[in-house]
Each structure stands twice: as C-alpha cells, then as structure tokens.
Length: 223
Image (tube, rainbow, N blue to C red; front, side):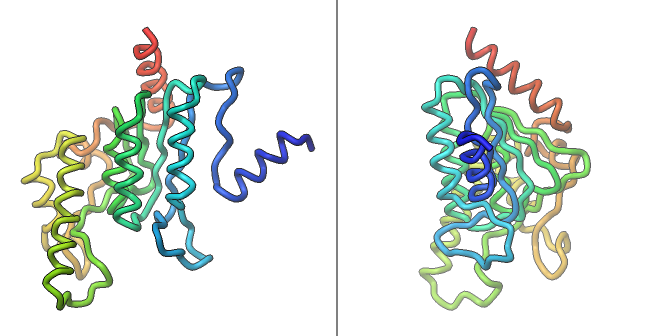
C-alpha cells in the first residue's frame, strides 16, 4: 500500500471522511453528517457520531482549496449538540462555493438547520425530518435563566431555518409545538414530500439529482 493510500485510510478510519479530491479526480467534495452530532461533550464510544472539530476544519479546507468548486452535504443524523450543529450550519452557509444537501434516512432536530444551510436542498422520498423544541434531558427546568437561555437558543434555530428555506416562522413554530405528533412529546415528523410541501426542503430526489444540481451550480458559478 502506498503512502498516499495509507493517509487516505487513516483519514477514513479516524474521521469517517474521504480526503479532499485532487484536481485530476473531482471538483466536488462530499461531506457526511452521520449519526449524532457531537459537541463539547464526548459521547459514549458505542454512539455513531459526527464530531464538529472534524467537520469545521474540513469546511475551512474546502473554502481554501481552489480545485473544489462545490460541496455536497449528505445527512443521516438524529441531531445532537445544538451549538455545534448551528456552528456547522453557519459555516456551510458562509461558504463562497455552491452547496447542495441531501437528506437520506433522517435529518432530525439540529440536522434541520444543516439541511437548509445549503444553496439547494434535496430529500429522499422515504427520509424523515423531526422538528421539535430544544430541550435538555426532559427534566423540569427550575431556573429562570436556564429557560431564557433555551428560549433564545430556540429563536436562533427558528430564525436560521426560516432565513434559509421557504418555510415561514409561523409554520415552523406550529410544527415544532404540535402536540400528538411525537410519542410522549411535542413536535412533528415530516416524511419526504411533507418537508417539501411546507417549504422546508427544495425538492425530492437522490444522489444523481444532488450531483447533477451541484455540478450545474458549480458551472454557473465559474461562468
């Protein structure tokens, strides 16, 4: 095995990511958001996680790499750390290069802002997105300051999602606080077409559509 192949294997093993493409291969980079988004607290080893300290340097590298002309974000996540998820979403939104997201399986909770942070968003017909209020552990919040912090955090999520999709604040909050949508909870599960119908996601599709759309955006950007 060559030195380059060893480095690629190490990258895949430690970060779950392919190395950035060289100019002779592809001008598009694929970023995977899989499992639970890990923030400042390290999750148990049996959890499938996406670590934000791995994702943010990759996004910085994508922005700086002149050979990369577009970013495809593939999501199959249950959500996770709110601030880490928002940081990833804000960074994707701030990229100067075309971006497309593809929700496969699920783009739940804080995965929703990441899914809508791209220039164009796609969801598989059977994929789902869970919209619910921000919460900690389900315990009663006894400190007013904690409630105010969560309320402001929630406003940040709602504002980001509505600025970067076609869903209105009223509709998104109604979905978030809908009772009976989730077992023993409040919130809503949107399946494929439902996410498109409410304006959260742009279109239903799959991998081929995502690559084609991103390639078109990249060509338009160059021209």
